[in-house]
Image (tube, rainbow, N blue to C red; front, side, top):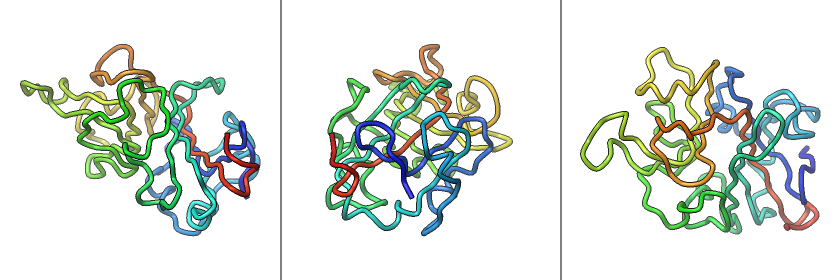
Length: 204
């Protein structure tokens, strides 16, 4: 089942920061429902969630929203995608953006823009501008908009560790791309993927 959240959007996937969830495996669990109706009932409800409808209902979806939220449910960032005639593997792309809180993202150049992201070093839901900066600089030159970093003993960069607490870390700039070491980068409490479509009371 999926449950109404705001304006017809339905929660299909939700992860809490610091919950030690393997969020990559959760997304890719074909045909599986993980969590319960309580965890899917609202953004701030405890528990991680995955709907089996991620694998079955794409013909019905029209828009998909990826949003980050603070502890009290306040929205820190959002991007809405056109997912008509798309599927679970090809909807999260720059050219599918309808609207976004990231004012400089639409049409921008990126080195990663995908759910799997830079899988080998544990950066998923990754919208990255560049690595290393114009003149090199390694980790201190990395720029982007959104990243969920996973659990590993030796992360590639210090910024992968987030600001505090256990993994995963949900990092967002909220507005414009930033260096990941910038003090204005926020660590969100929750990442939510929700959908609207023909059988979900229409799309706003």
